[in-house]
Image (cartoon, rainbow, N blue to C red; front, side, top):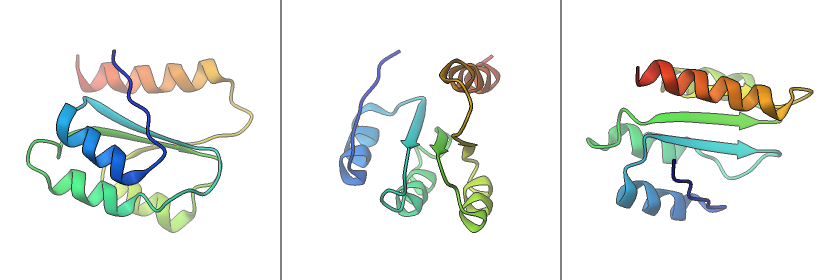
Length: 99
């Protein structure tokens, strides 16, 4: 497993184009940049369209939730969930995506 970290959408896009990751995870403890344009770019890029995307945030608006699910983004609202359960959720979804 290799992990890249970026706090800027533009940098995340550069990394995705260069590295072609198996998964992308947004961990947003508070409202951050709008990721919808990034997700649209990923989904429209031939080599990245099937990339698994996770969106973990403390607040995911209902309308955002609908759009994210429409684009195949796995979401989890952060809260009183232990970190180990978050990791277990992500690992389970990755395992089912790549049996």
